[in-house]
Amino acid sequence: MSEESKVELSGDSLSLADLVHIVESSDIASIKKTVSEIVNVINDPESSAKQLKDIIELDPPLSAKLLRLANSAFYGYTKRITSIQEAIVCIGFDAVKDLALSQKVSQLFDKYDKIRDYSRDLLWKHSVAVALFCKLLYRREYRELGENSYVAGLLHDLGLIVEDQFIPILFSYILEKSEARGTSLYQSEKEVLGFDHTEIGGAILAGWDLPDELVTAIASHHDPLRVGGDFAKLALSLHVSNYAVQKAGIGYSDMPRIDLPLFDQCRRQLNELAGSKINETALGLILEEVEKSISVMESTGWFSHGR
Ligand SMILES: [Fe+2]
Ligand SMILES: [Fe+2]
Image 1 (tube, rainbow, N blue to C red):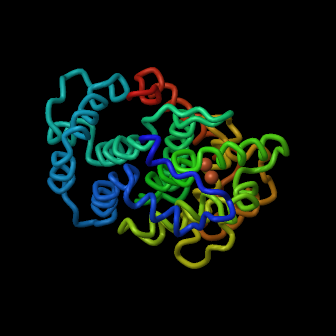
Image 2: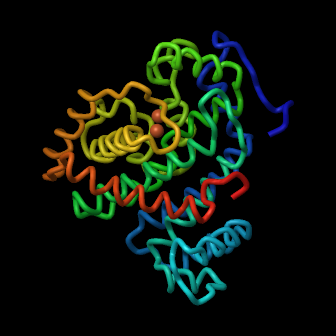
């Protein structure tokens, strides 16, 4: 990101539409095509391993990153994997889908940018943990695939990246305000900008040809009770995952003061909706698994700058 392309506007003159417009022609939008293609493969029950392989192979840097990680200790595979086809056979279609998504989205977090307590490295670790948590929630508690759960976690705080990249001075002021008062970032964002990072993320992703369920969940991850109908489950699950990961202190936290009553309400609503029994024990077991994965990923360099 060059200095000239940074756009610093005053909080008064900046509209959500301005910001979305700026992002559309930026490096952030460069991941749009591949991400939407992979998400569409995941959501299509008829999709094949060949379709996924073709999407990945059309993106050589993604293929290279994916193969490097497929050969890392994380997957513990002893034979050297030399092609995407082989990766799909060895580590599985499901694992390659997640790996392809996470590696494509990780491009957004490549820049080392520390503003007060915030950095993209910490936000990336947080996002991966939320993705893993949300996916496990679907698989273990609802016995469902939760096709959009993993990508929802990866992309849910996209609005924060947009703020740090295009309005760093305002973003620093927002961080300072939240730190001083111990309030969540979205509250300070509302005061300073008139909108928050959930709205920024939702407005950008609405133009990315992604499932509505996914965009709605991201756009309401701090206020999921307003989502009704078929989309409520993912919105509530994303909020619960975000809460659990922040409470455990994994990566960056945009909610210094955790809203326990809201979390409890979301958990109860989810149990009614999904017929699940999400309680402290269930969440603790998922968290244990997430922490284990995060620590192996950490030791294999997933979160270091220039990954
Ligand atoms: Fe957030
Ligand atoms: Fe978050």
